[in-house]
Amino acid sequence: MTIKEIAEVAGVSYPTVHKAVSKIYQGKMKDGKKTDLSYEEAVKVMKALRKKNFVSPIQNEQVSSQNENLELSDYELNRAFRLAMVNMNNLAQSLANKTDELDKRMSNIEVQTEKRKALLPPPQIKPRDHINMIAKTFEPTKKENKSKKLLLLLKPTLHERLKTKAASFDMSINELVNQILEQNV
Image 1 (cartoon, rainbow, N blue to C red):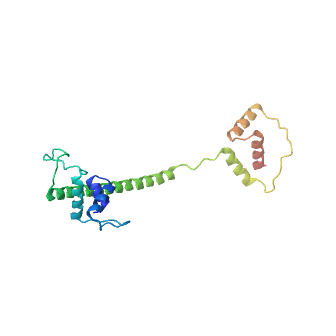
Image 2: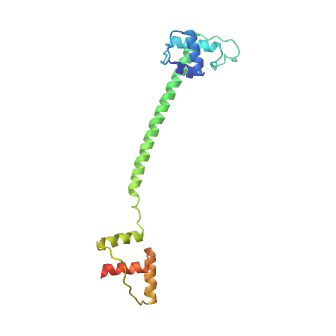
């Protein structure tokens, strides 16, 4: 077991276990390297921490309070250690299962998002932009300025229809009449 694992099982901080291991096993620890302790060494460190009341007692009817001087047998320590290891393994397995479940859900969401993107309508083009695109396809290559005037008399109802049509295409009546004439003449 590593110092970090012992700290997690014992419910104490890493520096506390580090200090206890360095006192009990002076030559075992090397700076910057992970220290692996055997099962027996880990139990010995946990016993040392137990005497200093750093580790909470095993919860059963025989333990009345933390303040009493308690001596745990090797069997009880082994049992507590095995129970803690089983709990850690169960938590690790549960975490792995949840991670797998979340990965599956995320991939499912990504697939659904891609399917929905395909169902979205294409972006809408404003009427004026659409007419401008059409006009550019039929427009002569040489750009010609509008310099000639035409005085045109219209019936009031025709004028209103032209005005409404031009407004729906977001353009002036003059631009609309010019485009109609260019396409039909």
